[in-house]
Amino acid sequence: MELILNGGYPLPGFMGEREARSVAEHGRLLDGEPWPVPVTLPVPEELAGAERLVLSDPEGAPLAELEVQERWTAGPDAPDGRGAGPRLAGEVVLTGPPAYGSMRSLRLPPGQLRARREAENGHGPLLAVVARGPLHHRALSRLRAAADSLGADGPAEVLILLELPLEREGDAAAVLAAEPLMPPRTWFAGVPLPPGPDGDALAPYIARSYGATHLLADLDAPGASGAAPAGPLPVVDPGPWRYDTAKGAWRPAAEVPAERAADEPAPAEVDGMLARGRSLPAWFTPARVAAELARLRPARTSRGLTLFFTGLSGSGKSTVARGVAEGIRRAGRTVTLLDGDVVRRMLSKGLTFSREDRDMNIRRIGYVAAEITRHGGVAVCAPIAPYASTRAEVRAMVEENGDFFLVHVATPLEVCEARDRKGLYAKARAGEIPEFTGVSDPYEEPDDADLVLDTSGADPAESVAEVLSALRAGGWLPGA
Image 1: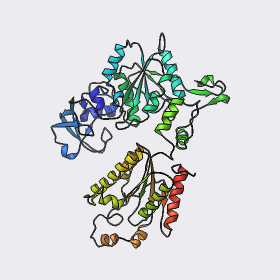
Image 2: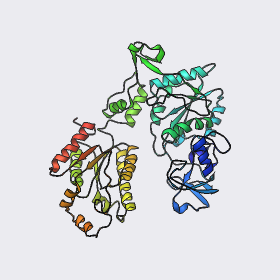
Image 3: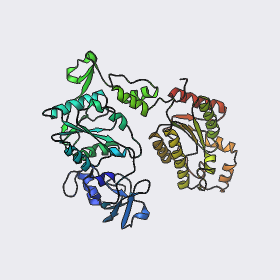
Image 4: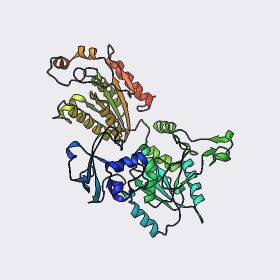
């Protein structure tokens, strides 16, 4: 919505079925213009017949009005890849400027940045760089080389498109920290790029709307495909660069003998150094960038964490969670225990045991846990959480702010039912409790658990010790 309203997308609104299929199958709008990704508006079934919609931000402030010009229903082969269901299409009209979102001052509309550039006598080539993460020395060296190759009387101007999620700053501060090492006329614009391949495909079109004339290739980045992206802008490719250990500088790979060449540490290695509180090497990244990354991703001993226990009723997860929370507290960390039954009486009072309400219960727990995590605390959660999709939602919420550690308490059903301390299984077998997990409703075992416990025949203290040991080994508690 933001990119439609500010001109980042050269589209009047949301696409109808024919246009969405044209884009998905042929990469073109109905007027023949190239465009890479369908831009559609899925709506709930109850809105499928609407003639007019007010579109608002997450706080309810109106942003735009949609006069519905087409209603269509996507099937399993939905051209937008967003699942089956109703879609509404039509032009959108701005009703109020966006005010929601982190780092709002960086979210410049394309027209505003073009006007600023013109006011400062900006002219000539404008090289766009898509920054989905920090720019280290290798990327900065390639950027300067590309700008030099385009400029006539000096480096070309540069546009840094910062990937800026809606509700958090992401790595924007770490990107901005490298500004002193960029060409002198460098502009910044924060954009809510879609994740993954869609964002990669759309970035050149968004850059063009800001006035960019060229796009920097990043073919030697980790995981790159090795083929220049297709799009509306010519790609400038300085080629791969490597670190010359003898000269102490990053140089084109062809100029660095193999015996003295070094590459960047892999992203997982960088994450590991930050997690352990170790300094990033100066040959790899500028000191200012390293400092910002240390702030954004502090050592795990002070980083926010959600420890999420899932398992059947009677599996022992609450008992283990209480013991673990006490161990975390003794280790010197701030901890909050969000146990299933306590949460039911307070945070989720009034919810039923329907699937919809059980999912809402888990989402509420996840929201509170994410806030605790964002502020550097440890949230220990112990709901049943039977559905994989809802657990994935909670993981995504938490990982916007910190770390998520999933413990599957995999005690077998027959053991849980034999314990039946609260008499719930007996009531479920008698039909007194409908949709009871493990009896009349499924439990979807996680395939992404960081630790699996079976409390059958085990002393609770042993299970607590196993979890605390895993947290120490991962660096979230001191003593590893």
